[in-house]
Amino acid sequence: MKNNYLKSGPIFLAFLCMGFGDVVGPLTSQLQADYELTNFMAGLVTFMGFIMFGLLSVPMALFQDRKSRKFVLLLGMVIALIGLILPILGDFSSFGLLLGALLLLGTGATLLQVAGNPIMRDVSPEGKYSRNLSFGQFFKAIGSLSGALIPLMAAKYWNLDWKILFPIYSVVLLIAVIYLYVVKIDEQKDDAATPASFGSVLALLKNPYVFFMVLAIFLYVGAEVSMSAKLPNYLAHQFNYDIKELGLWGTLFFFLALMTGRFLGGVILNWMSPTIFLKVTTVIAMLGILGLYIAPTAVIGFVSIFLIGLGFANIFPLVFSITIDAMPERSNEISGLMVTAIIGGAFVPLIFGAVADIFSLMAGFVVTLVCIGYIFGLSFYKRK
Image (cartoon, rainbow, N blue to C red):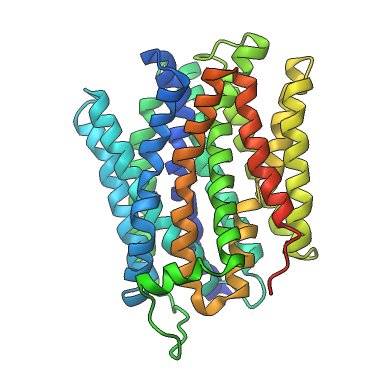
């Protein structure tokens, strides 16, 4: 048992670092206010953070099929660490440097997702993969939460801003690199399985079940990033919150709910099946989104935000683990496809922003409702 905790420790820490990539969400509202960006242009900030998921996920999944998941996990941490250090060395002198840093941070997060989700299966007891993946997402939610919480605390107590995130994240990543490097992990391999290739990965998309589940990840991540980026705008639009000083409370509350929901999900999945839980959690998410439209006060608005976070919390690990448990012999290829689908975090916010610019901010939230509605419908799909 002690050995299991030793091996799983650096993996949970990797999930914490994975959450650092979500900083592009909270940064969006801050940069939008600083640079007077349109909703569409602000969406380009998240685009930089998520574009590498679409470009690198499958190649890195193939690479780790031949190398190792631990190696890819370490490589992702090092790349993210370089991305965080560069703006510090450059004294945050230009927006271009910052965008480059976010691109490297997104690249590191891509590799962490590609390797982190399947390697969790290597360190999980039999039948506990979905549970541990939800707990891993709980740690990721802590990392995501920090992107809003730390700047709020820094502004209140130390008269600092979002730049404080970069040295803090750098220290944590350095510790994670050292911890993972010294721990030996036995990776599960099916010696009879054919080595993964681009052809085998793309062939999986011909399987309707895999295609629909990959699309679910694309839409979910896009909806989550849209929420983290636009909830400050929601509070400003509906309740006249100052977006610089108080707007981040919307993102903070959302990530608090994500963190709470993922911890509860790890407990609930000890006695509820993943497929039933997916139905329950998507219904909660849709009720929360609808609540944004009818909230008469800020208090009810925050209740709706909390419901959204609770509902969103376990969708990613449930879809991911349900699919891999259905086809464990193709775990590397499925992981590559699903992490590629995280590119939804680059494109769905652009659609949200375009709808908000053309119609209204509240019309943009319909985009997230459609995304979660699709996943709710998919939860009834039976694999043949």
